[in-house]
Image 1 (cartoon, rainbow, N blue to C red):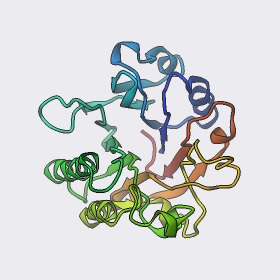
Image 2: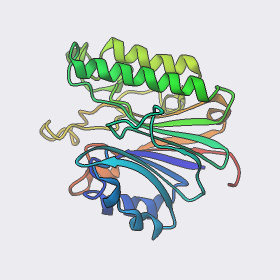
Image 3: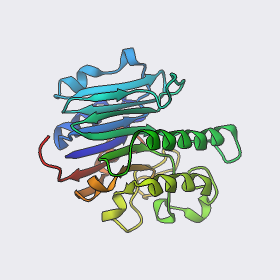
Image 4: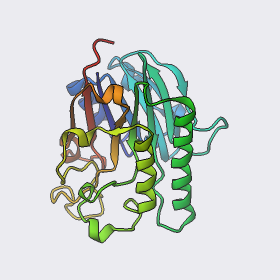
Length: 259
């Protein structure tokens, strides 16, 4: 099973990057964040033409999440809470007995602000949802843009960014609570070194070429799947293309047999 996650930063602006990548890599599952499109305008045909089914929840110009799969969906959920939420940040489904969660965590703006508190509350709600609906003996994958660098090796300037949004201990403590629950940060299973990033800010001059990045996109897996991990990598090539997203693809392969 090959699964990938990608913050598209506007799915319609990255349609060629996404379609080219799908043709080249043929993932079983692709989780997308920041699609920035209303549901009525979501480019479904672009996925069906490639042989993928797709589920999504969006809103105009902001947020938005989707899961594309070569295999059928069941138990689809488009809201984190039982009531419809104003921000499109969560989608989940079962895909051939694998529980897949895709999340776009709020950025948080700055510590001490209402947006930062909302980020922590949203993560707490996500953890509570997981605790209610899953257990760590189940095959569960959680992907997405979490807008948190967990360790100093996960960003280019840990001293300069210490205590700032995206590298604040309160955020890091929340991510570690997911890991205490039973999720494994599978990228770190195979890659212990620094300098491995998934996001390079547009605003930093030549930030990508200088590798001034952050690792804020994750694929988490419970032990039944993490034990079957065969390969995980960051595909930087799409970030070097013309008009790229500020993120790139994170990809993992598991030896779980045929779907």
